[in-house]
Image 1 (cartoon, one colour):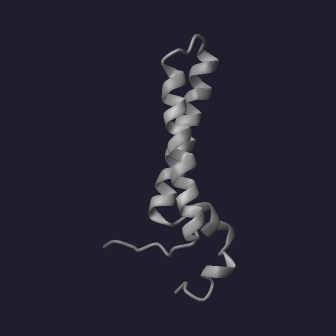
Image 2 (image 1 turned 120 degrees about the vertical axis):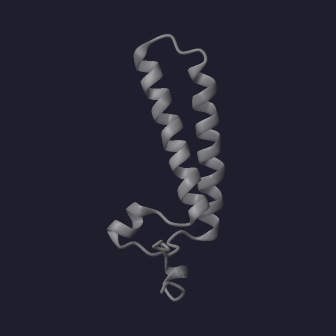
Length: 81
């Protein structure tokens, strides 16, 4: 049985998350190719993971943290079921 998450991210925020997350993930991957220390590798991997998280939440239209905090943008309050 699959559960459908409610949309709790506005269309503008979804687009921004996808663009910024994609840029972050690509930048992290590019930086990883020239990493010279363990700290640099860890920080660049964190950038890639954070970027991918933004892309996924933007694509799905659902942010688990927003749901946990009970945040629903004003423009979506009437549309949420």
